[in-house]
Image (cartoon, rainbow, N blue to C red):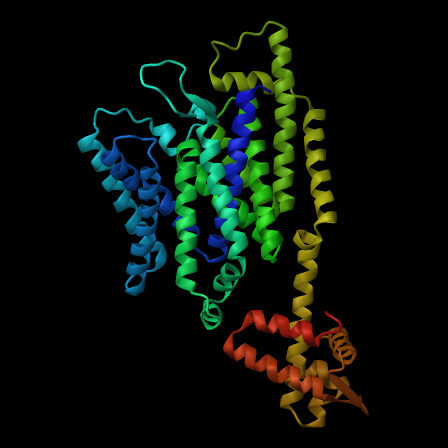
Length: 463
C-alpha cells in the first residue's frame, strides 16, 4: 500500500463521517431528497464566487456555495407552504432551475474552460492526494511554498471538527426538534434555527466534499449509511455511531473493490453502500445472491488465470466469447459449491437474525392472526348479553370457527385474564373490558402504532 492509497482512504473516511452526521438527521426528518438538491444547486454559488474572485481555491466559493444550498432550502419550503405542490415536487422544481442557471453562466462566461464531466458529477479521488495545500508561496521562486499536505484532508477535517462540535453542543436541541418540533418550541428551542442550522451544515459538508468525491457519492454517503442504521436501531446515539461506521466501512471496502476490479472508485463505494442496505433490509435473499456472486467470481478468476497460463489469447476475443470460454471450464461441482455456500450463509442468517428471517416472519403472521381472532372473540362477548351467545360449546357456531380454534382463543383470553368462565358461560373481566374499549377506539381512529403498544401493555401471553 503506497502513500497515495493511504491518503485516499483517510480522505474518504473523513468524508463518510462528515456526511453521516447531518445525513442521520435528514433521514429522521424525512428530508433525504434535499441533500440531492443541495449537491446540485451549489454549482450556482461556486460559479458566482469564481466570477467574483477568479480563484477556484478562494474560501468565498465555499461560503457562496453554502448560501446557494440554504437558498435552495428556503425556496423549496416557500413553494411547499403554498399548498399547491408537495415537497418532492418543490425540490424537483428548484434544484434543476438553480443548477441550470449555473450551467448557463459557465457556458456564456467561461466557455473556454475545460470541464471534466466525470470529475464534476462522480468525483475523482485518484487526484485528491496530489491537490496540495501550499502557503507562503513567493511568486517566481520555485520550491518556496510550505506544503501542508492534501487540501481535501484540511477542508473535510475542518468541516468534521466543526460538525462534531455543533453536534455535541446542540445534541439535545437537535434531538427534540427532530422528533417533536412543537415540544421544542414549548421548551424554548427554536425549531426554525435548528432546521436552518442543519441545512447550513449539510450545505457546507456537501461543498467541502464536492471537489474530492463529486455530488453523487456525497448523496450516497449522506443517506445510505443513515438509512441502513435506521433499520438496525431506534436509538439516536447508536444510529449516529452506526451511520459513521457503515459509511467508513463501505468507503474503504468500495475503494479496494475498485482497486481489484480496476473500476470507478465512487461507483464501487456506492455499490457497497447499496449491498449493505440490502443485507440489512432483506438479509436472507441478499446474502445468498452476494455469496453466489462471490463464489462464481472466485472460480471465474481461477479459470481465467489457468487459461492464460495454458496460452489462451483473450486479447482479440469479444467480451461474450471471453465469458463463454471461461464458463465452459466450469464443472457441476463448482455450481454445487456456489449454491451450497449461498444456502449455508442464508441458513446462518436465519439463525442469527430471527427478526428478519422467514421463520420469524411466518411466526409473526400467525401471531397477528391469533391476536385479531382474540379481539373478534372479545368484541363478540362484549356485544352479546345472551348466555346462549356466550356459551363455550356454542362459540364455534356463533363465530363460525372450528372447535380447536375456539378452544385456543378461549385459553389465550383466560391466560391474559381477559375473561372468566362460570358454568360454561364466558364473561369479560375488567381488564378485558378496558382492552376492548381501547381497541375499538384505536381501530376507529386508525392509530396502528398505538394499538401495537397497547397490546404490549395488555398481553402477558401472545398468540
